[in-house]
Length: 182
Image (tube, rainbow, N blue to C red; front, side, top):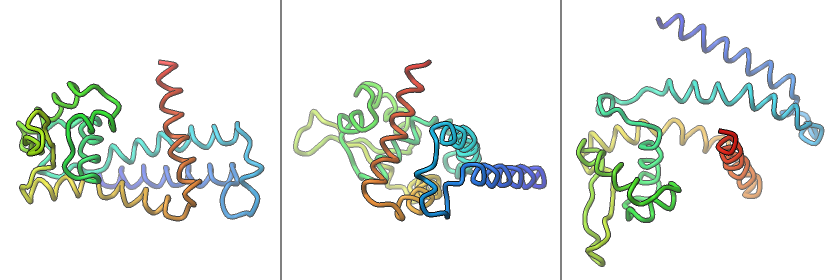
């Protein structure tokens, strides 16, 4: 089984090298200016499935394996990891979903011991959500999200703030365009 995974990794690496060669976007000054829309679409159509495949192969820590966490849970946990304890209403705004949806997600994660929910001391009507203070659970969430965060940091750190904004805008635009065609 390990050999099959290694072979798949090698095949993906070869595809990535071919895509980079075909597109000619790295290394050569001014190459980006010659990138046609078709070349960019081709590169993205080759790259995005590999990204999804690699993300799916990210091992889920033992503590979280039995919990049946969905991508929406990953997004919520990412917000909590980066932003710290957050009111449900603010999580809903960041995740672009209804507060009731977040409340249901939080209830599910709370039952499983992944997050804690407490009343806001300044406004008892509001709930503040945080990743569980249990060191095993917090460590598992950190470990699960760390490799992806490191990869994004590695790529985005080398860009200007304007380029980073463009990357984020393009990813959001792609998601919206894809949703409009579904």
